[in-house]
Length: 154
Image 1 (cartoon, one colour):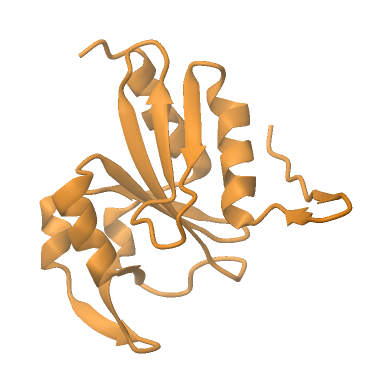
Image 2 (cartoon, rainbow, N blue to C red):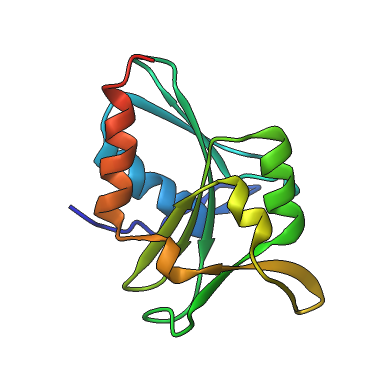
């Protein structure tokens, strides 16, 4: 079941609007069930957006989520920040990069070979060009991978 929630909570001092990362978190947690805890990073400059912790075996996964405008990806490569991938490689190791379009979702596990991808610049920032053909496709494949970690005791 896929659904989106747009929520504005208003009180006397604050307006809270769920952003695309919070919507992704809600969508993912609705599907993976009660065995997972998912925490959104609160610092704007954090290298990753989320950490997921399996309550059964205490396995962790870090996720970096990118919401892109458009119905689908019209390019052969997906972009991720140069510094981000290098810092994930140094500090996090187990990370999944997710690119979400209106009707498509791509994801890839962090691996050393990403550090050998072509680089370029987009809007002044250095990025890695990750071949779309190396990525898994679909929300269901991401769920299957995450759920497979629930059964793994080691």
